[in-house]
Length: 273
Image (cartoon, rainbow, N blue to C red; front, side, top):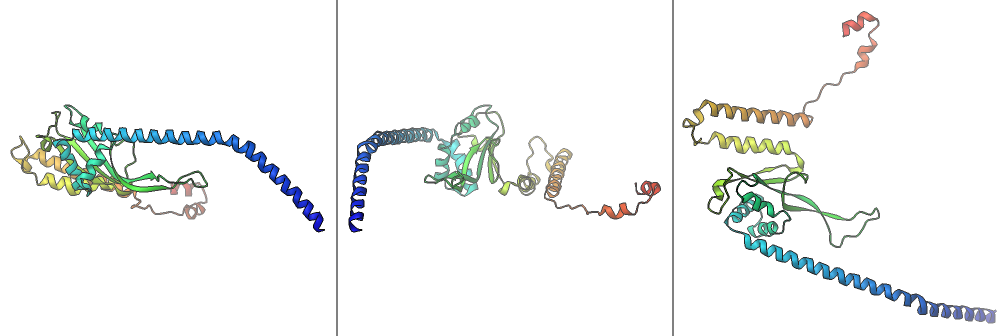
């Protein structure tokens, strides 16, 4: 029996040696060019990433050199309203793909509004691995970014700048030509955010306003009073609409079967109708 197993073992050893030689001589040699190609691809990808990072850095520094008193005014308002440092806001702005909208806002007869959203945004982790279903692990993170307001869902805080005229915005007139405001729409509740902004900020401000330009009587003027009444009425309508949408008004459920079962003839139906 020992002799039989020993002989069988020698055959297996011989076959494994032959197989190893075949793999070493052919498969591994064939695999080497593929490995080399992968290394080249990684090297090219690394070079592309470095070049992109270099270009991004150059762009940011060019934008940083353009920042003047007008930008500083926007940055300080955003930092105060969103509770970020001015350095953080500046870095965010010069890194934003829509940086050119700021210049369009400052230009004569330029954009009438400049919007910033500050809200949770899903960001893919750099070392994220694919799940079994093919999706990746995304991380929700607060982000400040410039927007036109028509392409992204609004679920957080909106900071806005509005122009009061078509004059070019300069460092000396930015505080007079540009108005700043914010309203909170956490969880996407836009109606509630707008209602709060109007009722708690705008209306009290208007009612305490002493200077109404050419209207010398101020709050005593009938047109001013009608205007304030219209704004109050609008806010009340807004509040009612919000309550209706939130199902604050429930219609009583009626069991129709009870009434239908009691109807026996044509006259009963006519009476019920």
